[in-house]
Each structure stands twice: as C-alpha cells, then as structure tokens.
Image (cartoon, rainbow, N blue to C red):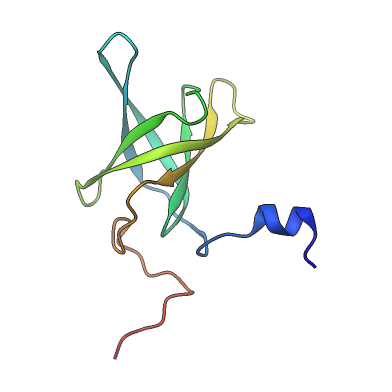
Length: 114
C-alpha cells in the first residue's frame, strides 16, 4: 500500500516549469472584482502554481487570463504558501473545467496522436 505522503503527492498529470505572465480576477464578497497581475511558475493539464502578491482563501475561485493565448479559465485555490520573496505568495490552483490546450504546451505524459 502507498504511503500517505505518496498519495498526497500523486498528481493527475505531470507538472512542467513554465514562466508566463497571467492576470488573476477574484470576485469579492461585496460584489466587486479584484484584478492583479501574477506569474505562472509551473503548470499541469489540471492546474498551476502561480506567484502572486495576495493570499486568497482556500477554496475560493479565481479566473486566470493566459497572457499568451488571451484565454480565460476558472480555477479553485487548493494551496497557499508564503513565498521566500517578501510580499509574494505561491498559489496552487486547480482548473475547474480542464481543457487540453489552455497552457499551449505539450505534457510529457500525453501520447502523441499520429
């Protein structure tokens, strides 16, 4: 049987390093919308690790605008870590409706279709 740590670290798809700017949009409690620029650190088909200047609540929903493709997807915050750089946080985000090409990069665990 797998250890508890191995089960926690198991991912649905491989993660690859990627550095691209993104824009995050968060709906606030009072009905407004907060937008800020951020940077992707790593991506998977189902999520991303993003460096941002704010710390959202776990479970909150965030829209991510991919600056390369100009495509937007909705994510859920599953992890927040205070980054080593002062004033920054690393956000673990899970894509609510995964698409195959949101990040526009091939993933190592995908089989090429010939």
